[in-house]
Image 1 (cartoon, helix red, strand yellow):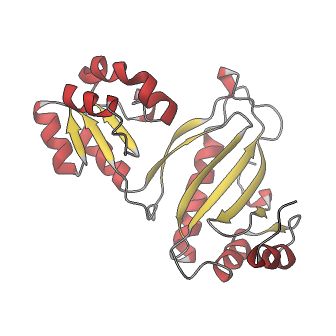
Image 2 (spheres, one colour):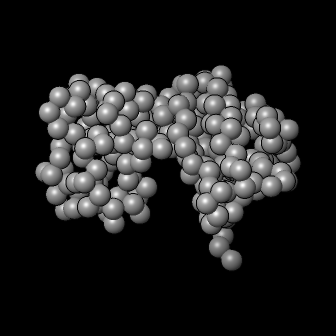
Length: 232
């Protein structure tokens, strides 16, 4: 059995892994033990009563976090002509067409979001095996295939995050940095959880939000009372 570090022992003794915390209490605990060396990311995870192997139980979408993510998003856009100019003016990190496709095929995939105009999907489609496994394939349902590339870039840069349930029925995301104010993190938490609740699929039966936990990069995972989650 691996030996626990001093910090891991301290956290194990300090926090009850079975206790249900209120959001405010959990956040205060995470801030208390946060690293002084770097700005940790605060993350929320939800265990949902769904089986994503069934199409009518898939949970996926986008949500804009009111206080942003605290992370600099790198955005690539497939567009030509005026649309390419619009994307650049909106702050896209890379804009192109066939040249961008070849660059990605060569392994240059350091992006957090890939957006495309509808007319570019013939080019983007050739990158299915490259972008698909990384969750970067543009999708009209998520607003990443759109003629309004400028707005899509602004949304991505401004705190919009994508969520998608994993095989085990878990969905998680960073909701900001530990340096954010309590109010900013609470706003982001509420926005994220509300989006998940509203995205409840038709095939979900029984209790939908079964567990909620809050953690930080180096902190413990603390269980949040699901009574705080509207519609749980």
